[in-house]
Image 1 (tube, rainbow, N blue to C red):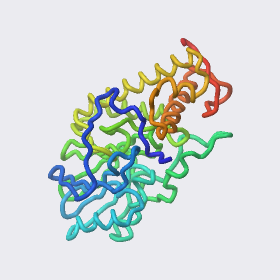
Image 2: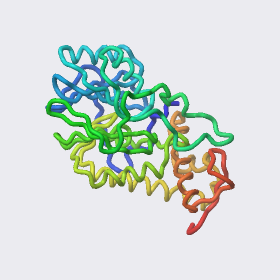
Image 3: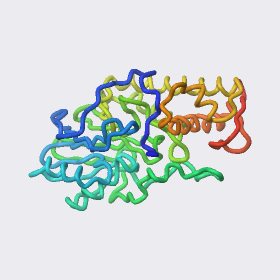
Image 4: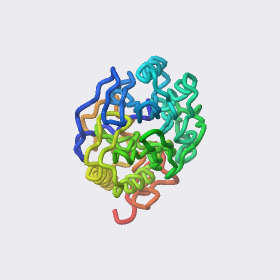
Length: 314
């Protein structure tokens, strides 16, 4: 299962944008932004990973995508006569970061952005390493960027914004010249992003959403799907959606659903079976946060196979 999956309830709150950009030729989106979509469509990646080119002549490439030589060759053909100044990576899932090494080998450009892959916590006893296949543990940037770090080229600037949650090393990148934010998999218009322990953290994700609420950007360009328009309103909707999900989980625990399977079956009725694993991991992330806050109780730390009961103020 790809860890870069998305919670299987798009279309509830907020209003998700149904339009999907199609893989194929590079597309000019704005005077400073071009996009080529990797040919890796799936129920979990929309039409594919969005690789962005920022600038003209001397450019940065954001998220060159999976280990797909054909996709990298297409990017190089798109940029014939131009110079790749920097290769920028938002986070270390295999549909985003491995292509950076292929592109670096062809161009000599440095890899910048997120640091090596790291999880929110250690794997707990009895847990299976569900997400190991999706983590790009070979990622080693030439320069790790932190909050506020910037790189620049002719007419463009990219500023790192730390947004842990989906992964703990996740970065977004502001482009102040166009009041835009490359939001990676933190905020997407087509679906909510999965937050799956131990790879990610629901508390960190919610804190990162809160961090974005007062930012000045007027459009987000995400790692999958089309743009996020009216991002302040959209981010507020995402936070409300997560609070509603948390409330539903607490209600099911209070009703006697003591395990994750029962909670998922009650909340996600009629769900495509292929998405059950993603739903279970999303519920688990919420339960882990609820247990830490004392709102749900379990014996010991929260576990995928744990038994849960109401906590304080239930």
